Length: 247
Figure 1 (cartoon, one colour):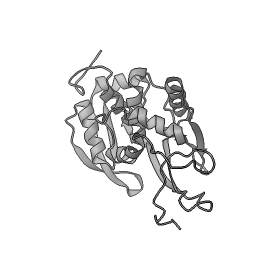
Figure 2 (tube, helix red, strand yellow):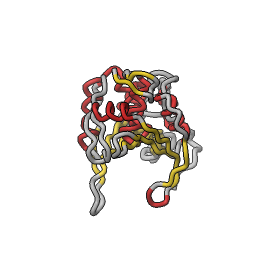
Figure 3 (cartoon, one colour):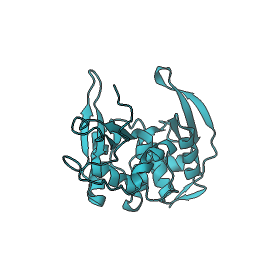
Figure 4 (cartoon, rainbow, N blue to C red):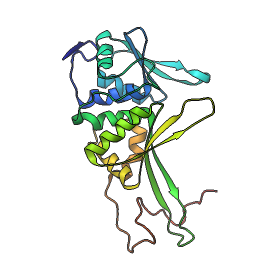
């Protein structure tokens, strides 16, 4: 155990702490002074959740980022908590150097949910590809992604998920001229469904509301179609045939 005023006592692994570590690992910052930590977001409820998870009294304040972007930030000082984070693998200026962290398997789902809320996405879109066969074949597609400048970190996430729940995922790179590659870990189709059900194992776990709302329909059992669809099995639901078609 490690003393910390952040957690009003000693640092012990818990679902709330693991979620907060996921947020800090992906979207947070450890100052170079060895004491201060911060998290910046456009979502106030995410920062409120972080404050609750870590028992923080620090205020949420407006923050201006690079390129004139505006957001909100919570910043606080805690040398013991800072040192504990370094001990499990976090470092200042971590965007390209982030590496595997010492996160227990028992709370890895909470940690991963924090990572996705910090720098990931739950993406749903309409697939109109098979409407030439039948106008009713319009499906909702689902992807869960996590983005990082560190391939090593994402490969550790993917390997741990595969070890714990046998999902493979895939990692791809986006390269812009003169810049370091940006890596994306993606889960699609049935794997995305299983991953969401694992990380949202309870309706009361800490989470970013808008991503949980996007995931909500996919946490319910799928319905049954009156007939087998054409082609390979689909993940998702058939839309109303009168739904407006995108340009």
